[in-house]
Amino acid sequence: MAEADPFPPSEVQSSAGGAVPQKKRRLRSVLMLAGPLLAVGAGLWYWFGQPGVVETDNAYIKQDIVGVAGEVSGLITKVNVRENQHVKAGDVLFTIDPSTFNAAIRQADAQIATAQARVTALSADVTAKAADLAAARDDLALAQANHDREKALMDKGFNTRARMDAARHAVAVARDRIVAIEASVAQARAELANGAQVPGVNPAIAAAQAGRAKASLDVERTVVRAPADGVVTQITRLQVGQMVFPGVPLVSLVRDGSARVEANFKETDLNHMRPGQSADIRINAYPGLKLKGRVESIGAGTGSEFSVLPAQNATGNWVKVIQRVPVRIAIDGKSERPLIAGLSSDVTVYVGK
Image (cartoon, rainbow, N blue to C red):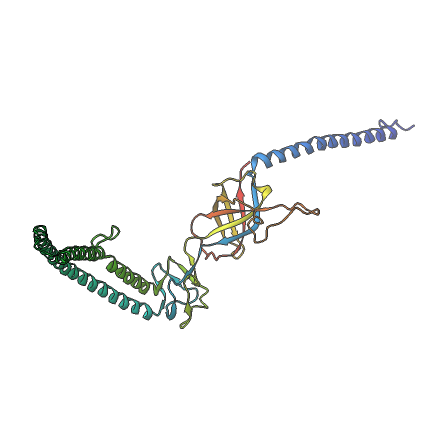
């Protein structure tokens, strides 16, 4: 007779069938607890573990560009620079024909000499008229004495009325002559007088001297110099024989040390952005270059607000568009590669959370 099996098949199957579902239930429970815990941990790490950042690829290198123009008109006689040449402040860029202004200096010198001669003539005239005035006063005294004698004779009946009238007329003529000479002397002295604005110098001479100073300044301005250190560009119109008109730029100068980034951020990214926050700058032209910067200022208006044709949203089919605000990013340190105005860049600002 065979021995009895200690583990009947039915019990083995029952035992195995109960163990497998129990393990699955435990695994399911662990996963159900671990999933929310991982999600909460990831959220906490996102908000507290890593710094908050805002990014944009709508950013460009900007530099100060000075349009150099002549201050006087004339023909260009010499060009001293070439395209993309680096210059120092005070270097000669081009010169203008000074012939017209040299002639103006000579004309001003002639006007000064004429004014000086007139002052000398007026001084002599005043002296001469002063002598005439003294003679006229002597004539008046003589006429008055004759008048008194004629009147005394008239009172005694030894004179005629005709002689008396002649004596009176002589006195009146002498007085009128004195008045005329005194007025002429006053006029000459007025022309010789000095104004409060230019004490010690006759106004006519001062005007001529001012004309000469203007002509001399124009001669100096025929030599056009670089206003700052930088690179000259756009010199196609800078040619010998080209006519220069005051205020019309002929060459552009990109100023050294003025590079910065103008990043156009979405208006929804500005909530936590403040001046002084650090930023990373990557130039598209130099993939391996990474620059450090900081937020220098935030624009006072959106890009569309300062456009030539601002958007008008008063129509019935208005669609809200997220606006872009220009943010100026200062570059810390010196770049290893040349920063060309207009290069595209990517900017990341660490706003902190």
